[in-house]
Amino acid sequence: MTSLFKTVAPSLLAITWVSCQTAATSPSDNKVVAVPDLGFRYTPPPGMMDKTSASSQEARSHAAAYTGKRFGLLLDLSSDEDDASAAWHQVWIFNLPRATWPALSDAAATAKMNSLAAGAKATAIGPPQSAVISGRNFVASEFELNEPPLVKHAKIFTTNCKGQLVAFVFVSNSAAKISAMEESLKTLDFSKP
Image 1 (cartoon, rainbow, N blue to C red):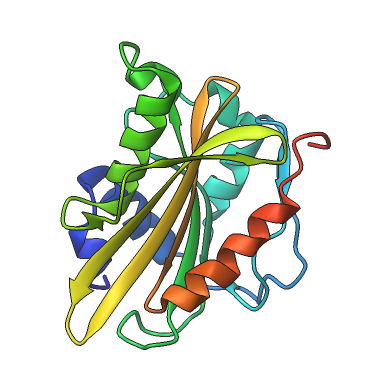
Image 2 (image 1 turned 30 degrees about the vertical axis):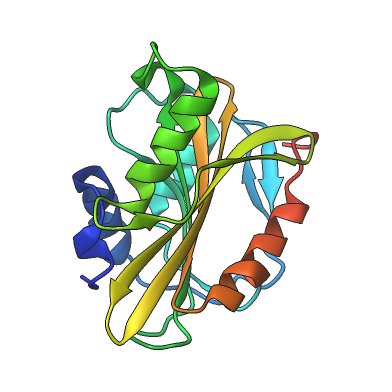
């Protein structure tokens, strides 16, 4: 397990461990990820290795019915470098039932999801921000994790979709790479599952 994985919430650890047991496949260039049960399609950043397990790929077809108390993993992509490399970057898509926090507003629940996805040792960079992407309301949060000589950067975008909190997690050892990966959110399409 990489050092980033050691710092995240226990539920994220279990998901990451399972996904890391799966051999990487070819780069994700122009591969559209469809999550029909949640009603969206997404084209990830190019050149990343797909490490999504077969069970996580299968979960996409019934993601709206997910009732687990831990993050569900829908996508796991990596640049395939060691996480200590300056070029390392990662993309995950997680889901968690919105009903996990019934007393919280949607904005508070999505912000909490972002914090949990970042992990307990990560430091928030400013307050969560509202964003509209492909006509959907998201909460965006930025985090940093100091692992000398590197600083890991994360930007997490979460929305409420058909009763599920859906988080798009971008992590890199380069703040510039985070901005480039964030551009992939422009491909999100909620009209064609």
